[in-house]
Length: 84
Image 1 (cartoon, rainbow, N blue to C red):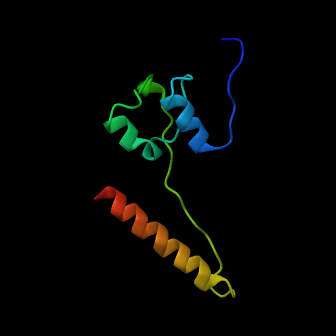
Image 2: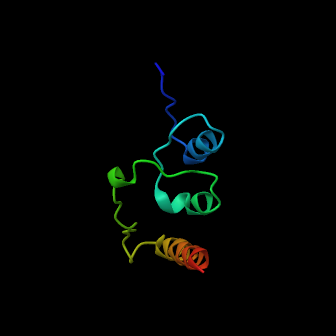
């Protein structure tokens, strides 16, 4: 194939891979459900990059600290629900 599809939207990348447009390089936790349902097939697993965890840094003594704390609590809740 002389050209590649380059996107900066992970949903578009996943949709393209699911619809058979080619191979996508996607962070594994985002597609665990699709892999489990065999909608996507893993290839070249020995060459997959390990990604470290996601970290959020913020100053606790700022006016926006409460908003950031709400976001962090929301993300933790969604991640915990996904693991169950």
